[in-house]
Image 1: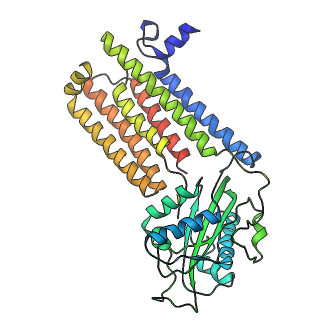
Image 2: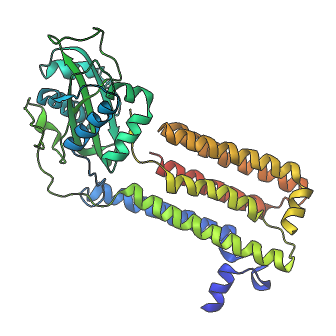
Image 3: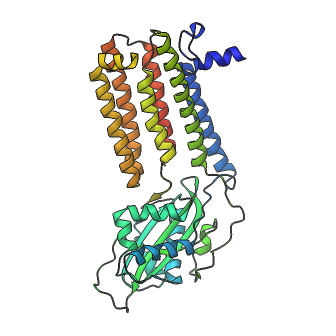
Length: 300
Length: 89
């Protein structure tokens, strides 16, 4: 056993002066292990949707308060929570799950403004921010504030009210948390400049539980501190996180073995027909950085 | 010392690789700041493809381009692409 481990990690005559773990066969095994893990994750997600999924700590209250903190920093007035706008945002999130899309406009041509109107909110100016797969509110707000168009919505002085929806569901076969912000100013309110709704405005409604998507087809007033439905099973493990961890472990292992291999080979001045370890390390480090520092979630 | 000798001997090859990796790293952070997943996916796939092409160029110039070497670079590049496509969803 010790001999085999030595052959795996240390270049020597018996393994043709190349750590066995760096051989094409072992690289193939690593790929197979990673793909097998992906298959297991996909199967579990499909068969037992409650086991794997995004464990989101995002709440309506946190999104609202952090949005207002950003506005305060800019010296703007605080946005008032509007349950009707939240209803509109929840309807949008539900529509995305029901019709399996991730965009401002639905495949059937529904625009964000249709949700405002169908919830009964009359606006002079309005907008929408979308996000999915974020673990926490800090990451979500950072993403929005780093995007000029989403930032413009958050710190837009023309908006007076906000509705937020945080909804869990299955999108493209994967358990996902969607966050929708709907921003607006009522039609009868005084605004600096009246204009057509911008595509970057956001309205927020927070629904924090996995929903049967048809549960919010009927208009409901959603108080700020109340979730629409409750989660029976709170998903604790993110499939993406598992993939990242397994990928990082494999790449880190390859880098360690490459380093040992390079050190011993250079020390012994061994000449052999293999790839360049130094270039492999450089290339893998970039992929490893993607795995370690890769951002969470997507915004739209 | 040996590494420096090797880099000096094939300075053009390593300069090209250095540029490929540096530009990729810069763009990776740029896309992450801008939360552009689609561009990140394209970037990782392009970097992997360029790395594989570089390996052919490098080993051809060194005169040690063998099937086992090609396979090694191909599998490593393929693994990076698979990981990127599954992580950047």
